[in-house]
Image 1: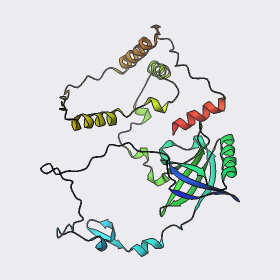
Image 2: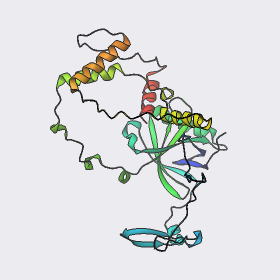
Image 3: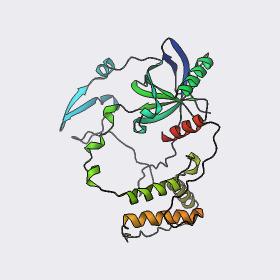
Image 4: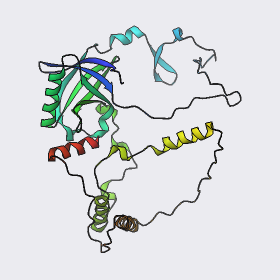
Length: 297
């Protein structure tokens, strides 16, 4: 059973909602240890002085910020503590904004908020009010000596508040700084190309189903590990060095559309509109909208 990693309260206006914080993800990355190929023993990481090659004791370590090549400003722990954010137990809501106004690029790590002792009713009140107004709370909270900007919203399909830490604006790279992105006026497209691309998109449209997508690489790695542990020989497949020719854009669009038609049984070959996949009926229009917005995250 998951354990709460932080307890506190949501604060907005004069209302206080006691809450507990739970991580909303369980990373499934396959991790490897470094071993000595000759002995099979694990490699121990040591802290070594780059100038002397000697190992440095933990108590002799200090924090240093590099201001130029090999020049550091040494910071004492007490000095760092003097600028730490005040340790509080509140998630202070500063604004309520529309969900559509938040670009998903700002989201970082998701958590669940559960009501704490005596907080069931105000928790439910906040959840329902935010759901009815389609608002997201933007707040600040200090967790583990770090102040974070967070977004709190009710999940579409569950009666729970989700809190996601967010990136600050100056942490997001401005795409205008990337030289490889061409300007719109430098790349010309015609109406026929756009129409076929839209038909292809609509033919593949459907509802977002998270369980449909699998980490096939992780599954393949674990399967390989199990086989090797059982003594089976792993056959390494040679890489295909041939590079497929890049097809003409219009030809690629038409071929893709024809492939979808063949798979879905639509034999209309006159370039007419392709009907999108039928979506499951929703209990309400607002529910469908919330599900789509939740998927965007």
